Image (cartoon, rainbow, N blue to C red):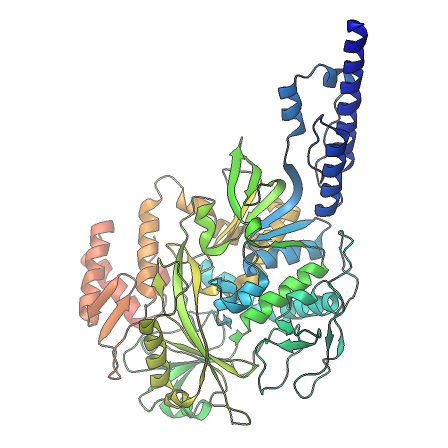
Length: 615
């Protein structure tokens, strides 16, 4: 009798374990099953079917254990085999801002790979208040106005600006199709959308009617009232934008006004960086009559452009939804840690207790990247505000102004964005009196008539910043399935098209199949530049040069820059700053007096400065 009972128990165990193995292999999105009750198995299977996409050919297929091997397992062996709570994913992207979204959109549009995005903030929360750079940015596409030095950073920024017009059209087309109910290109989830949402016309003009039944509609920068009618979050008197439009604007270029002796007046554009024209004091006022009388001239960059960063982020999310990207928003989807083992990321641990096991993972969570990986990325807080032109009033400005200490960005929806402070190391999103005083005083000093416009909004965002102000892109040497996309500093919106293509092609095709240009860019922005043995001296030099090149928010108010301010401190006059630079370079590199003189001449001319200061 005892032997018969033992035989029955063995067969019951065999039946349970074989069923577990079959179900786990049949549906790779399922949680691993244990030899518990039939009810437990069924409940886990239903849960996995509801939360996971169907298996893709790119996901590794699990090996089925033989019945004899299952029979011989101890309970602890069975638990290890089932790998409980591990949920397979093809490509996992941490971060739902422009860095992650651009890569996700490119991958989903150019391959059959499946992408999952994890973002800890809810979209509706980000509409109200967020420190995410993708929502706080002014949206300037301005590699020339930024006065970037020659080198890979300028190269990638120029290339991305060239891509922007076509890329934005692709994003807007995808967002429109996904929001109006067109069938998603790669929708693998079987979801039917978010219900009927209708736009009644709202502001005057335009062809904005339509039934918003698509999966992407809930991500647009438009809100619905209780009756399901769409209206713009930033509704105003300007010509209407379609709900999926991004406000991309390239007419008129950028103007960089100069006061006597400031960084703009003593700078010259890099060779081969695009069209640029120096305009004297009369010529700049032909373009912008409202400029302060003490403006002595300015650089006009006809190819720099701008976009509404908030609308772009929302439209890109809609386009991603239409391309089949699975997006999970909310604090329960925050990544708490990465489990590294044997040169691979084996697990992505979430706040809700789930553990994802991805084939590839992209870390793109902005200023919080160093919470997951030992990356030298810190936040640079920027405070900004927006003004609103009165109804039917003639516009004060015709183009973006990018001066030494302020930028003023007219938007297609009628807002005028003014920014921004540069506050290294701050994670808070607070708007402070000193920050607003800086932005207000510098903007109204450049364009006094702005002082009569009403303030509409104020906010603060975080720029993810590396020591040398350059991004970190590409694969990691330490872990074969981990990729990085971040540290974009003040150029996150500008870099979205090119970096999305770089990361996408790297994951889809591999580095060996990239163009020589793309391989060069990935090498220049590799994480390994911070970990190469003996590279600390070069990194320190480049970081210090970048810190001295870009000013923080302080300058004189008497028309002449008598104070030189950088991230490293403030100096009373240019001579004091020059002396400090000389001490630094001699201490670090032992430059001779002749080499020092050559560097200062290059800096004074403003031409080829980066090449002269190379290591």
